[in-house]
Every structure is written in structure tokens, then in C-alpha cells.
Length: 270
Image (cartoon, rainbow, N blue to C red; front, side, top):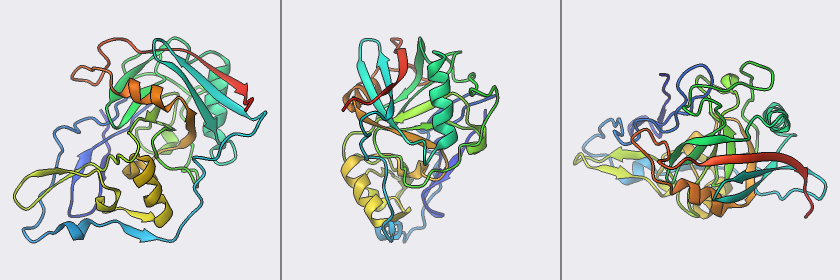
């Protein structure tokens, strides 16, 4: 099983929060409970992990679709409908793949096979266990890191195993509440595990307006720069969060099957 270890800062922690999708086990957030923490120096203070703010950048996640623009509409049995704005200009290959698979009903009758509260809901695997799936081209594809798209709550992106060149069919939707930042954890000088939910305590380097948006919308900022975000939920975020509250087993698989009945690509009617 391939794992990604994402560090908030050199002296903070190394937590196995991985997003894999293609030829191996596909998991999101494996070993998050073990925390896989490295110790902090005795004199390390909270100020040492304050976010480093840089100049503002353009944020595109929350641009509403125009009338007539293609959107994705996902119907989840017993939960409701999720409407997703797609970003073909920013994530051309990612959108082309998702639209192509949706148009051949690839995602219909698949499940959300992994759900982690206040983190993400993962689906798109025909095997339903995180080990399957392929792109519309029959192999992995390079999706890149689209500019202006971040892991705010409701963002949809491709899981991968070894970078964005290993994108396939599996996707995840960030399910954090408004204002809740999933920033991982670190170990303080006393050995206590401290969970980070404040964007300004993540130790990340972020544009000022992006940090402010995370503080408002919530999300998973440490995934930025490693995965291909290609869409944003603009209606039905309550459905995404309800799925995120589902009871799961030790492998984060919902105890009651959560079925994606249909994913359709339709013109936005306003």
C-alpha cells in the first residue's frame, strides 16, 4: 500500500494522510488516528507554527456557473443531490475525464467506499474497496495542480498514489464544516497530541486571502499542491456533510452502503 506523508512543518509532524487511486489500495487518511508524530523540541512554542502569509492570489472555487455552462449533478441515494461547478479552463484533463466517465454512466451505482468525518468522502471505484478504477483513456493521466483551486469545503479532486500523473477515476469531496480546518496534529513539549483546527496554526505558507477563506469556509489546506482539484460543490454541501457523518468501520467504509445513483452532466439553468 502506498502512503503519502504530509508535513505541516519540518519540526511539527509527519502524518499519513494519503490519497491514492489507481493500481494499489486507494485510501484517504490512512493511519490518521495513529498520528505518526515526530516530537517537538522542549522550547517549541505555538508561535513557531504560525502560518506564513504571502500576497493574495485569485481564488476560483466559489465562482458560480453561468447559465448554459455544463455542471455535474450527483444524486446520492437516501441523501440528496449535489451540484458541482467544473473548471475546464483550469483543470482541462481532470474535467474532461470526469465528464467523459459520467457520460458513459461510469459512476452510476458506485458507492462512497471511504468516508472520514471532517475530512473527505471518497468514491469512484467500481470495485468498491479503493483498489480499482481507471480514467476514460484506460490508464492514469496527468491532471496537474490547477491555479486558483484549493481544498476548501466542497472541493472535488482526484485521489492519487504517486502524484497527479496517477489520477484515474477515484475522486474525493472535502466534507469539513464551515470554518473547520483539518490541519492535522502535532505533539507538544509535554508529549500531548494537539489537533490543529485553526488555519493560522498550521505552519503552512499560504496567500493571505486563501488563509482567510479557509478560516471562513473550512477545508483541508495541507492537500493543496498535491492533488488535482477540478470542481466545487455550489449546491448540496449539506448532503456532502451528511455523508461525512455516516458511521464507518475500522477501514472508514460506511456501515450502510452510500450509493451514487447517477452523475449527469447538464447545462446550468440558474
